[in-house]
View 1 (tube, rainbow, N blue to C red):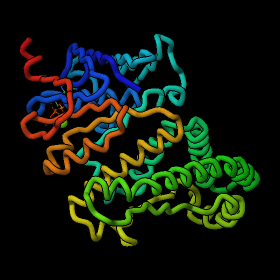
View 2 (view 1 turned 30 degrees about the horizontal axis):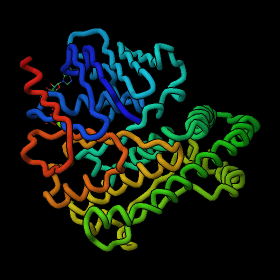
View 3 (view 1 turned 30 degrees about the vertical axis):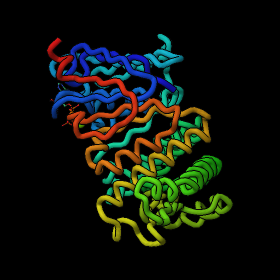
View 4 (view 1 turned 90 degrees about the horizontal axis):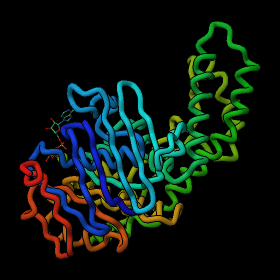
Amino acid sequence: MLIKELKLYNYRNYTRKTVSFDPELNIIIGPNGIGKTNILESIIIVSNTKSFRTNNDQNLVKKDCEFSKIELSSDTDRYKVVLGNKSKSLYINDVLIKKSSEFIGKLNAILFKPNDLEIFVQAPNERRKVLDIEISKVSQSYIRSLLQYNYLLKEKNRLLKETEVNETLLETINEQMVPLIRTILEERDSFFETINRHLSSFYNKISAADSEIRIVYRKCCEASDIADRLRDAKEKDLYYHYSTFGPHHDDYGFLMDGRELNSIASQGQKRMTLIAFKFALIEYIKDKIHKIPIVLLDDILSELDRENQERLIGIMPADAQVIITNTDIKDLNIHKKYKLIDLKEEAHV
Ligand SMILES: Nc1ncnc2c1ncn2[C@@H]1O[C@H](COP(=O)(O)OP(=O)(O)OP(=O)(O)O)[C@@H](O)[C@H]1O
Ligand SMILES: [Mg+2]
């Protein structure tokens, strides 16, 4: 998977901007606030349809403008996202794509960013978001099951709030939920299984350590118990007036040598764990769709010492297109051929 060219119109700080990329390594430099992260953010929007910095698309539209447009040409397709006031239109090769599930993940990109560290301390729903986005990008059945499950969950919660709950309807909803929950649990199981197969080895390669890093998946139940558990939860659901059981309560945590990583690891070790997690994610995507995602590193390298920078660049998948941002090229220890995109110079052209 390769990005050839990106065009932004009225997006964030850009009125019009065209950036062409090298198929291998690209380094975007420029001072704070010039728009480096904005470029990576626009690529992620083409990948996920959502920003990682805001839930409000209006923030993406340039100040005092009505709409913005992101156009991205890959080696195979042309993607377009038009963001307006409360509306978002998605196109592939000029064809309007009505279901976002048919757009998400067509361009697959993995982003490394400094505040990834939040994953250790965030609320479970934020951690689940990371999980759902990554699996959705590679599995149509997951995204469809998740959307349907969330729809039924809303219906169920609405029903449970009524003074006289229609229990027959409640049971029908539960029955409809069973196969959806099964798909969600199986896909999440397979996700963690693949990630865990790679996590320790990437961690040890990046940090030159010898540790065991694992993710524990704290799931609502085993796939074989779903129907029973939904039935068992009924009394509790009726008492609390909401759905107390299901994959919408799932969570996961990182372990280092069998202990809760967040409580024992240093900042540097946490950072390396997340970098290893992203590398394991690349392997998961390769496994599932047999394509190598585009790798985006936002301000990550300058946080590492020169030795770790070199190790990190060294273990990038050989065929991956990589886009790195940093304020200054002098801080980087890179011995490969790269294309330099200097936003400060371009701003003066
Ligand atoms: N909707 C918007 N309209 C106009 N300008 C915006 C909008 N949203 C963000 N900006 C501007 O975009 C700039 C931030 O860009 P960005 O975060 O990409 O910078 P950066 O180059 O990554 O900086 P840093 O090195 O600090 O990470 C800021 O100047 C901000 O004011
Ligand atoms: Mg930035």
